[in-house]
Image (cartoon, rainbow, N blue to C red; front, top):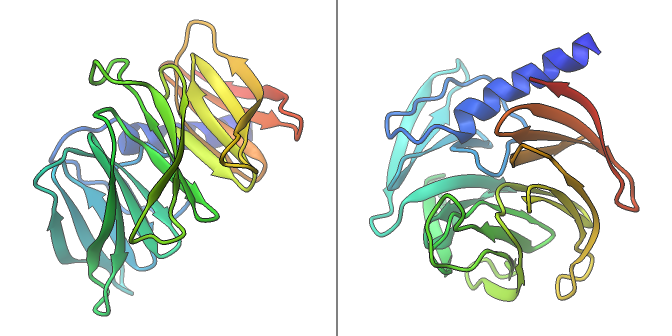
Length: 249
């Protein structure tokens, strides 16, 4: 139990700095690679460290000796960039009005491939098996817009197409694992069956009384969940039973 709590504490430190910093001067230290939450502000793809600023993505090359070499700063003048998610050799950027799909050119420089415009709302994004999932929230964010889960076909990443939008309430972070999508929404964590993107079904839901789940990571069959108060380690079954195993306050 002590070891689990130490691991959860380290995850909490990473999430606090990666997910909650809105400063344009945010400069994370490089501590290795791993699975990140959907609200992260920086990520590693191959030998590249990518860091979000409010209106640009800064690309650094990670040298063999650990040095960080500035490659380029890719500006996005029309949007406030909020989240970054790696997907193979591609990168997805969630902003306040659209999702950007980025790749690397022949010189290993980050470049814009396409974008998908949506209603104005906060927008984390994850992807698996040629499908991207994006939650749009107005609660505590921007107002007068719907709160939905968008399902986007990215099989042709240069021409993303909306498959379907699902209504939800107060969605935040999300993570995907093969046929399951886990979403922080409705004051809890929902587990959805995404085997048919046209007909996503909710298999399970665990409410967090007095807390708001903000982001989560799927790793080795478990879910690490960050709320506005604590960090939890959770298990789940194929049928959708979600269980809290440990907590760090």
